[in-house]
Length: 624
Image 1 (cartoon, rainbow, N blue to C red):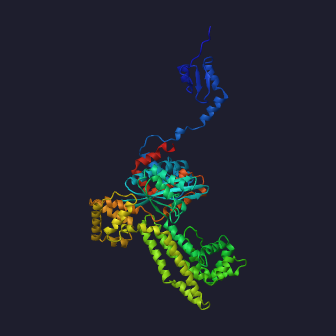
Image 2 (image 1 turned 120 degrees about the vertical axis):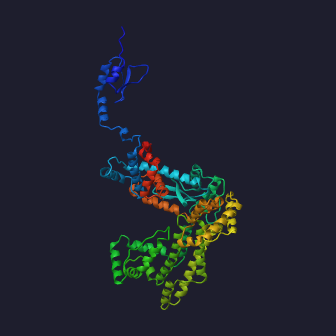
Image 3 (image 1 turned 90 degrees about the vertical axis):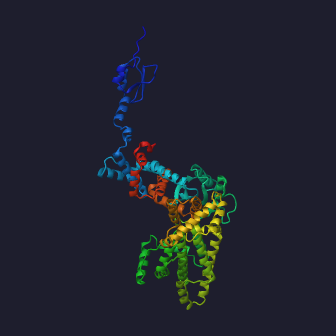
């Protein structure tokens, strides 16, 4: 007779819950859930199961399972009571605090343990969780806020630039726009790593981002550095540049705006290089001679004490900006006599420094260049403000050009320089003529460089009225309409606009707004915010005026916002955070910049009022 088969019945299921049937049609084939081994019960039945349970593999897997904790124990439950909300607020605030103050995610391991022991035993926000809160919650929230803001605006300007970070080429894309409630805003649109820096790669990258965000119709201008890749040189010739290719991709004309801060910096750089003494070479040489050499610094301190001069540490500077050169020159001038004594007394003095300190004109030229550097630094600081419109930048640069053509025409000599020249003339006749000639060359070079590189700024001179410094002339507004019509802005009704301008002039005259704004030094965008707030309160239409103001205010005069972004990246992504991914860096920078209107205490209030964020912080979905 055939042998009877054993089957996997209900009794065996209860006795061995870790054994399961794996085939619906055959209840003799089973599988062990502990060690994942399949076997047949047809012959042995219960004895087969007991034999399997005594095997080495089963015992090893059972011991491993007993010493492990299930992943589900680490996941938050689905309930969201007041206790869970308080915990989510605490964890979210600490994550925000960490990135706002450039703390590493690794530091949150220790911080989380301390908070758990001192205040709340349920608090868990170590490095992994802190990073996921920033990447999956804060980044999405900041993007949602930006998207909602952009729906309310008609025009935007794209700002971009590339920079190397070790072997990576980072390419942030920023967006600038005017909001009738908060004024000019500059936000991070994207931060990615690109494979090259050709005009084809850059233009396609920008276009893809713009298209993804549905901003193609709103792009009014591109702001970037004044390189051939971006604009085709000073004359903007050719088609193989980012500006022209982006226009081709968008199928419309957009305004190209170079960085005027770089232009001003390059102007004084070029002018100083044509002088007999190039301070850009001398200052670093002096700084490097003393940097990290204690013995040399000690000797200089002794000479300062003998000369009754207060010793101050010498400063270096970056060639990118002349802002840092001004204090460096000031320090050299302050210590000039002790420095001259030091370098002329040491053996093996660098020839360039020996020639510099032996030259009797050196100190005079230092005074002169410092005098000019102060003027240029002041102009750069003004135009690098985040919310400054291009109309104001035009005024500042025109003033700078007028300043230098006047100095050239009148052969101007600063008083401090003139006194030194007069004193030296007694022992060295003809020095006045020589120094005056160098100064004239400097003035002329500065003016010619500024004139050459800022010719296109005259296109924006018709936007002067948007600065709200005096009563608005209708003819100026008409010129602005014509200018923007050339750039595809044709939805302005001049009949309605005329009435809006008339009401604006009436309001400003009645309330003496121009004087109040001038005395309080209110920025142009904040003046318009005040105007639109009043119009909205009084139910006065301002749609046409708002269109022109949005277009004018979204145009920047520099690319300084992108440079600031690189500084923020370098501050956060240092050598101690070298394992940071570009995705995480993008989330960190977007959160820091796009949510910077909240300090850490205000962020607590934001989380209290926004349950959507706190639920996202509490949920385990942020790890997905």
